[in-house]
Image (tube, rainbow, N blue to C red):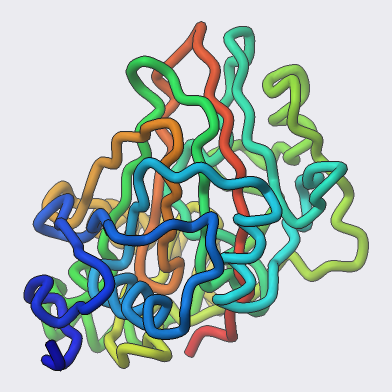
Length: 295
């Protein structure tokens, strides 16, 4: 089959198959064994599936940290989290762990990964080693749809706005640092000093995807205010964009299973890790892949 690749179905794929998860975004990909180094032709179809669906899931995978890193490096250089320590044996991998006695989870707000960096992460790869019997799902929202559903007038204004994105002071956390927020809350995850790594950046509110050419809202809880505006001036408009960007019809809820690897495109989605599994354990291995400067 030599039909061009698009999001209309599986006829365009020779090596993989996709099954949509929700009407807004997301697909499960079958026909791929991530314990093996993928041939270029297979990887090209996987990339096409990611661009078409924004979030792709590979079920029933059994991979080691080295194998996950091999797959991640096919997408680009590995991005190291400036605030969180990676695994001692594999510093490029962040072990996201919540034990039964932990109250806080990691990633429990609407955001896009590393938005506070000058060159935010292109993609995030999360592999499930242990999941609760119920709960621990992740929500995603399609930021293409969020932009495209705006009125022409709002699009015109949004196209002119730039956001100030901060890594260590979520506004809704009353200015508390990560160390303060996480103290005693997550027993097996360690906050570190970012040193001289830049963790405040200014980005356009509307970014153009460098591969698809589509425009998407680029917003999340790392945004503190609009550039050139005060906090008070920014707040009502920022609240509108945050609420609009997470409307139910733009979202997908992903149910984890042990052995699932999920890959998502930070250039056009936000995500939210739901903390609804007190008394259970959830263990994930996360790798983020370097991206480019939003435009």
